[in-house]
Amino acid sequence: MTASSSKAAEVRFVAVAKQYGVGPVAIENLDLTIRRGEFITLLGPSGSGKTTALNLLAGFQEPTRGQILIDGEDVSRVPAHKRNIGLVFQHYALFPHMTVRENIAYPLKQRRVPKAEMARRIDDVLRMVSLEAFAERMPRQLSGGQQQRVAVARAIVFEPRLLLMDEPLGALDRKLRETVQLELKRIHRELGATIVFVTHDQEEALVMSDRIAVFNAGRIQQVGTAEELYDFPQTQFVAQFLGESNCWAGEIENRSGNITVVSGAGWKVAGSTTAQTPSSGRGAIVVRPERCRVVPHGESPGECNAVPGRLREVVYLGSLRKLVVDLDAGGTAVVTCPPEAAIPSDPAVNVTFPISAARAVPAHTPSA
Picture 1 (cartoon, one colour):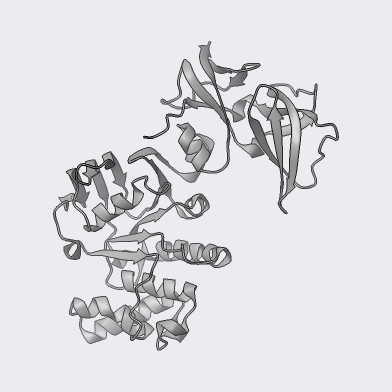
Picture 2: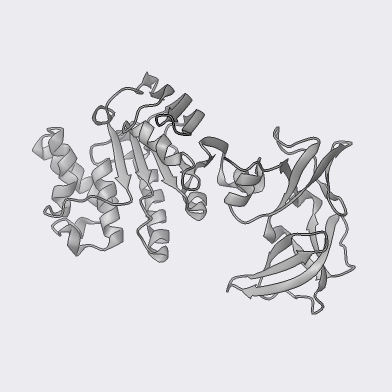
């Protein structure tokens, strides 16, 4: 099996909504285009709508309104078994009485694939997931990571145009999860299929995705590459959910093309970075911890913001140290630095960060 043998699908959600009875809306006005051959992650907390979106795409549920298009065909009312979609879940649902080879063969038997073709495809995917030596084992004889790879092999052996994965690594320990993440990236490169991956794990999304769609309260907050979302968040929710951020509220003023968040000393922010950046009114300033430094009180490097406070805590995390500072203006700042970095002995400090490192975003509105 090669990338050219599996036709990658294009997917479009067009004004899709899903409501359960008279309850709250689970998905509201979802517009999203998933490109052919890309690995896109739907990321968000529990109840954000990401799994509902996946279930709608899989055909397990029907939208209340809107269209779901796969390669231009409206599949909104097409049964799941007629969509030719591969599925991998957190619980792998392998048949315990079948060998690895028999588990992988199951979807091919259902499609009445000839025996010679079936054998070729199974051998191909066993090589792809590095399980040739385990073909005759039973699921109970495999590790969690090996079972996960069998589930992936079973999902791709019939060459689906689209592969959906719902929290497939959630049952694995951290070290194994990191290993399997890289395996899935490799498989995606070799397969060339379109993959839609659902997770609440931000690090998983950053490692694996071509693009990430961040969900909250049934809506997409932002779609972009890991770098775009991390460096240029458009909302306070995205900034705080994807990685760690310092977020300080304030009144925003637009001054000669530069944005200033007026809160305490009035911290300067580089010019407007997105169409969503507010030009005035209530908002927040967002700065990543690794872009901040802690210096003795009174020091203020040029072209930097300086926020006075008191150093409360220093936490050693192996590859870095995390510093927590109580700010004089209220709130806290988190700063990360290399473990060998000098730390002021006097708790009276300034937290400094370059003007270019700060972003202004709209004020956060808690969901109902």
